[in-house]
Image: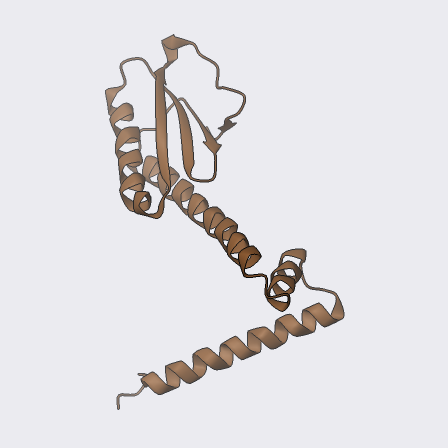
Length: 153
């Protein structure tokens, strides 16, 4: 066997050792009262064998995880393309992100960049049940950002 390459058995053993160490760390934090409320809540659900609540909790965590990743990927893609809008605001929900963008009048390059960034994240996250939808306006439209949106730019 090559030096530095772990066997399948070693990888499995290490994975379980790490899992047991994490469980013991969590146990110590709970017993000493320093565990976060979320950690305590998760273990209470497990202790009670409340599988409906467990899956509900996991769904919420998954939603937060994927919405965060979608937003980061979208903003990264917008920045990578280099055509930044004048204004950019987001409204988050459980399965979709609404984008409110304002661009300079007749700035087709920025509009195309925003639409391509939207298409990129939708292609990646749509099969997971998450998507992004853009409203793109020009400066001369003179509409304020709706109050339910959070300004990014």
